[in-house]
Length: 128
Image (cartoon, rainbow, N blue to C red; front, top):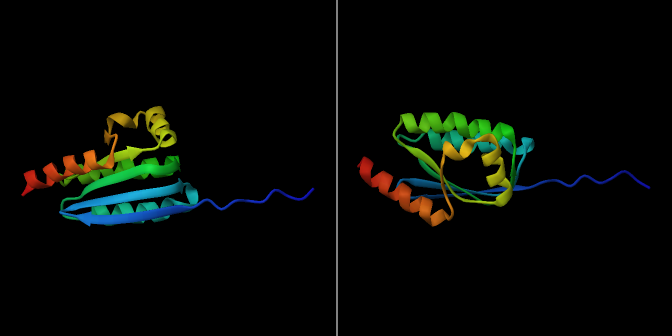
């Protein structure tokens, strides 16, 4: 009997820009090996003059605590700039993590990506 094989977990980032809104969709596993990549993407979004972002977690299978910490730190920065980070679509596993840590009260959660985009569109219009 040999050693168990290690499976490499994957994470794909898809970024869209539309009318002042950044949509960042994640597909896969946001584990410790991907935390730096995630932090870099969030830093790029937060560097915008008025960052408005929809995070689509509908295909995200798991999220680690370090990545949650990144989100908490960035939401404060973003809101100081009159922007927002919304979660539009969330897998059941990731939703449970947000519930467990009590972060459902920190972010605006929408069942569907389009609902979050609609809110963010109105936010961008109100800032102009």
